[in-house]
Length: 250
Image (cartoon, rainbow, N blue to C red; front, side):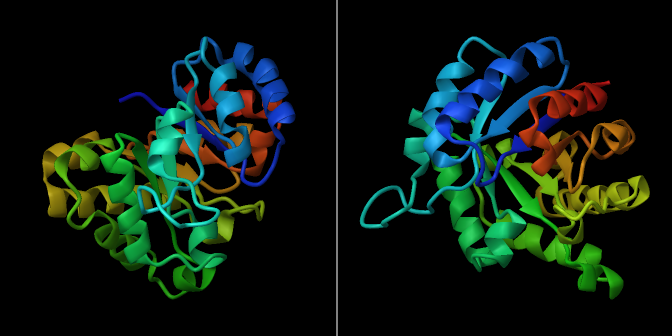
């Protein structure tokens, strides 16, 4: 199974800055064995998509609307993302859940919208620090996973990528240990197996997200149930993110 190393730029980089980033970053990862995905902000999607046209790097969006079109001011549809060249879209990132109040039901509807458009959704799940301290990590992940995947058609299920992002590790400098990351990933795979069968579970790519750095990427991705990383702030530096890609791919 090919590893995936993805960079979520969040609300950073103008279109000009994003295009300059690609010029510096793409040559450094041209020979990487991992699949590399960039998730720019909406205004930069088209420009970055054009800049990536002659590379093996994939384009993704940070969010989407659950509706295909209509009077939804400020929203962006799956069809629009596909038109910009996106192959992937983040769904249920912890900042969408905890800052913008997105529910499990909305996350599920966004997954359905992504699937209808042929996008591969990267479903983000994770526990807060309080939930981990109470020993609720596996229960929280299972609940988020089951709510999100319930009723999805088989074609969409086969395209889903899971990103395990402990909320307490995002942007804090704290990182889950390799044992914690593997335990969570194994629980995700087992829950998927019970709900959707061995075929879906065995082919499921599970990423880790949360203060990933060149120094820890290799050991995290060496875990048997992890197949990549979703990198936030560290992906804003093209040289540093390239180092993460190369370390993770190795």
